[in-house]
Length: 138
Image (cartoon, rainbow, N blue to C red; front, top):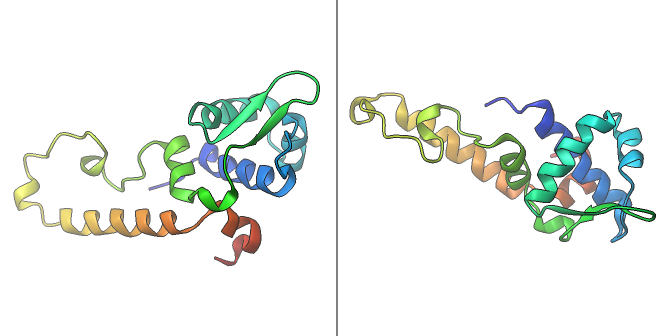
């Protein structure tokens, strides 16, 4: 599993909104400047987060973006799954994948399944609030 720029930036955006929002709408330009993300790329990320109802946006004067829930109610897994899609380490473990014809005799499938579970459990335990409070110390 490799997390793309979109996934990494989405986490940064969510942290930024949690740190600076306090329930208020934050202008996209402010987030872009603080996070050093181009407005065009940030717009794509924000659209994805809005469509998943992770954030909400308002256009016009005083508009911007804000979280839809408290930071402790978001998991890193949830945010990354929205921006990355599957976090599975191999294609056969992706949601909706056809069962591999070799699954019964696959010697590596148990290893990949356990890795998938470990990553999912780990990312599911870390909340947005954890990232705001501790930064890189997790």
